[in-house]
Length: 80
Image (cartoon, rainbow, N blue to C red; front, top):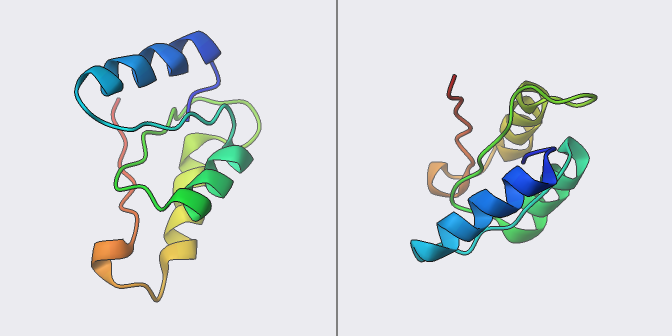
């Protein structure tokens, strides 16, 4: 999730070069919907966002994953 469309698309293109199949979400609610629909292995979150920030998205991902097996639960992480 990245609110800067150019940055999000550039990151997605770079990931494709390495063989990954990225999806792009430009805000928190869209990211939550995509995670629920696509069940990705990894979610990259921009922390400093207006509105619903990356920390709030990570919190909701954790709440949504309660009761799932560890192998299918998202494990959000952050990088400075």
